[in-house]
Amino acid sequence: MSETTNHFTPYRFCVAPMMEWTDRHCRVFHRLLSRRARLYTEMVTANAILHGLRERLIGFDPREQPVAIQLGGSEPVALAEAARIAEDFGYCEINLNIGCPSDRVKSGAFGACLMREPDLVADCVAAMQRAVKVPVTVKCRLGVDDQDPREALFALAEKVIAAGADALIVHARMAWLKGLSPRENREIPPLDHELVHTLKRAYPHVPIIINGGIASLAEARAQLAHVDGVMMGRAAYQNPELLLEVDALVFDEPAAFADARAALNAYLPYVRSQLARGVPLAAMTCHLLGLFAGQPGARAFRRVLGSEAVKPGADIGVIARALNEIDRAGERRALASLTADRSACRKDEQHRDLGCLLRRAGDVAGVPADLPARQGSDAVGAERRCNAGRDNAWQAHPGEERQARADQGEDRGNPQRLGVWPRGCKAGSDRSRRR
Image (tube, rainbow, N blue to C red; front, top):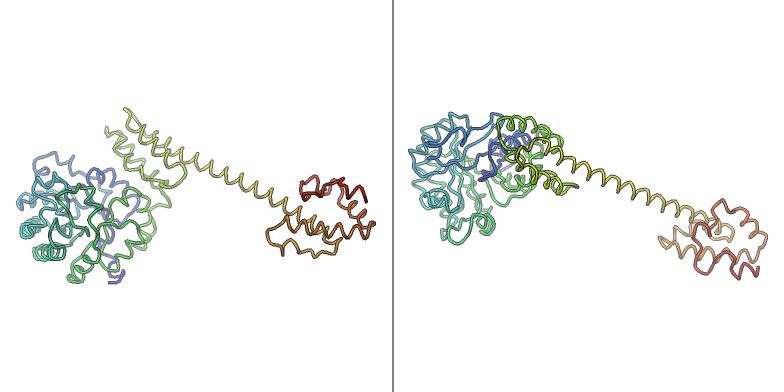
């Protein structure tokens, strides 16, 4: 499949739903970094939406669009009602999570454990499809525990696609519910991207989005040759500047901002508005810690945000002070570069003076003027050879020696003043006194 085929799919590039990370403040910032990336909420259970404080749980800023909500649950009726409520809030997609391997999810009988119950998942999808008009999608794993990956994935895909799923997002790893933590489940089970590619070939008309182990936009672009979309998680969150390149590299559109500094400045009005509503500064700055990674001052930037934003009454000035660390580090680097350039210039001047003296000596002694260049970087060896030729010539022609010394003079680059006399050949040596 060519990338052109995928160009207009709404799932071409997605930022994965991540618990305690992709909250509303994070999504506003990520939307500033990319106009086109599809954003997802943290997983919210259907029962929480039905019985909890909905605005606090699933409220979002319209500037986040396009944004999808991820639901957790295994009861078709409850999921259908939760999906209807989410659609009324304005979400553009309802995603059912059957890939999360956490203990809390397992105890609630939803998440990755539903990979063992494709018929129940299909019932959930069908119920939500009847309740809403927006797309209903499923995010899954290759399988769980001792399941055969191909059999488990294809059995699930067949059921949910028949039930009306509009797209399937596949984390290309198994989930080991026994013996591995959620973090280990993100890293230890081996990746099998090729199996997801095979799934896409089996369902050419159904959008298939790949997730798992994709750490760069170059890798994402490579995957788009095989699937309809790429979902990136921690790589995008921990290095948010990566999202600045998504529009240009993935959608062939201009970047939203020239750099992270400009995007952060655009985020400040939102921060001010949330502070005015009583939202703690740290709730927003925690999503900025990955900015400027690998750049001078990045560590100090994180230290200021991490230590000062959590203090009572912390205001937007904390962000300004953190940015000052980036500025100061840049100034220090510029000063160091300037100092290095000046040092290099001084060395170049010394080398030019030395080359001039060697050429003068060579002219008198009949030594070729380009000898130092032909001797490569061994300036000392070239100098010694030129001086030897010069001494021989001056012994044969004393008058030329006197004229050459007069031409050089104290103020015209006397080699003793420059400190370039070779060892054993100093002014006033026995040889000079004998002559």
